[in-house]
Image (cartoon, rainbow, N blue to C red; front, side, top):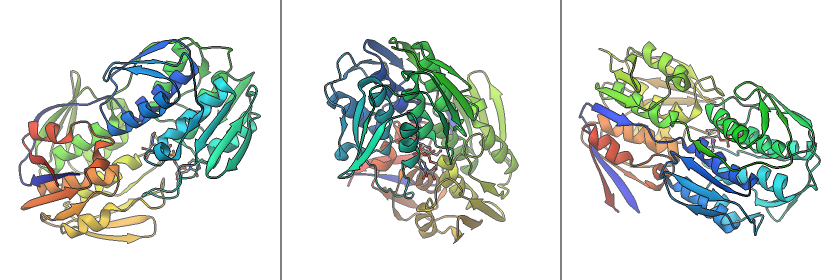
Length: 416
Ligand code: UD1
C-alpha cells in the first residue's frame, strides 16, 4: 500500500489541467447498458473508481477498450448481477440498476451498505423504480428488481439525490410513457448525463432544474460524447492556491460549475479571474474566516467541505462549517487536529478556530475527500506529513502527486 509524503511550505505556482469528472464519467459509462452498439466516450479520467465500474460492466458482458477515450459496447448483456464485492468498494455501482431494469427487465444489485460518511441508503432509487411498476424485493443483501417494461410515473424524491436522479432518468428513457422527476438533483454531472442520453435519442427536458421530464422511447442509439471537467478536482487546486499563498491557473475547468466555491474563496480574500481556458486563482494578503453550509447544487458542494476546512484551519478568526448533505462527514477533523488545527464538532457543524500554523504528522486518509484535505494541510504544514491509505485518493484524483509536484510542491508517493 502506498503512502504520500509531503514536506510543507512551498507556495504553488503554475498551470494545472483538470481531468474529466469522475461523477459524470461513472453514470455515462453505465448509460452504455441502454444501447446495443459501440459508444465512444472522451475525457474519461484514469481513476480507481473508473476501473471498478469498467470491471462491473465487463462482468455483465460489456466490451470496453481504451482509457481516456473509451469505447463501450453492450451488444449482448450476459449477466444482470452487480455483486457485493464490487458494490462495496464503490457505492456508485448502484448506477447499473436503472439501465439494467430498463433494457433487460431484470437486475440483481447488491445493497451498498454503510460507508465512512454515513448510512447513505438507496431507498429513493428503489421507491422510484416501484413507482414505475417494477417489482422489487430485497434478498440476502441484494436488490432484485423486475419489470416487463417500466411505466412512466410522477416521481417525488423526498431528498435531492444525485445518483438517484441519474438512475431513474436512465431507467425512464426506455419506459412506456412519460416520467416526471420532481425535486430532482441539479448537479452539472446530471446535465452531462442527460446530454449524452439525448444524443442517444432519449427525450429529456429540464435537466439542471429540479423537475426533469423524460418520455420513453423503444430503443437508443450509441453515441460519441465527452465528459465535463471535474469541478471537485478544480476546486481542490483552487483552495491549494489560496492556502499555500500561491497563484495557479486552473485550466480546462468550467467556472459556471464552481460559482459557490468562487464566491466563498473571494470572501476569504482570494482573487479569482477568468482567463482563456480556465481560471487564474491567487491567494489574498490574509485568509479571512468565513461560514459555510453544504447543500445540493447550486449550493456549496459537500465534496469540497473537507478541503475548505483544511483551508479555514489557518484563517484569521473563527469559521462555522455546517454539513447538511451527509450526517457523518467530519472524519477528517481528528486528523487535521493531529496536525494542530483547532476544530470543535457540534452536531452537524464544525467550529474552526484559525491557528497560525499547522505541523507535519503521521495521518491516515479515511475517505476520498478527507484525504484531499490532508494533502492540502500537509502542503502548508511545518515539517513533514505522511498520509497513509492513499488508495482513497486514487479513487477520485488522477495523478495527484504529479500535478502538485509540477506546481512546486515537495510531494512523493512511496511504498509503505
Ligand atoms: C453523489 C456523489 C458524491 C456526492 C453526493 C452529494 C456520485 C458518484 N457521487 O453521491 O460524490 O458527495 O452525490 O453531492 O455522483 N439519500 C437517501 N436515500 C437515497 C439516496 C440518498 O436518504 O435513496 C440521502 C443520502 O444519504 C444523503 C443525501 O440523500 O444524505 C444525498 O445523497 P446522494 O445525492 O444520493 O449522494 P450520492 O448520489 O450517493
